[in-house]
Length: 110
Image (cartoon, rainbow, N blue to C red; front, top):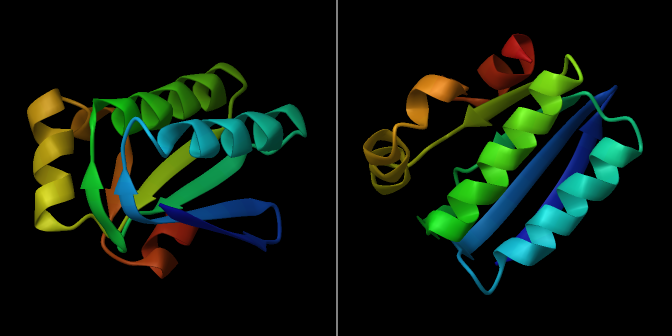
């Protein structure tokens, strides 16, 4: 997995690319933890370049969402491919997050 980070005002945009699995999820978890500890309250996960997500990747997204909700923050998922959307749907996680098709929609929702 390659991870890009971008800031737009006070919104953190995270773009994992490739596979988000047990090998790569610790990096994303570390970045998320650092950013939340630094006070980030609004996060967009742009998953449009994600080819695969495992349960380890889902766990990182779920934990980020829980931590943000606990601190009155917000997490939005953007650009889910059919395969990634199916994984989120089968796990029941689609109902836990705001999901949009485009980054602009996601930025407006967060």
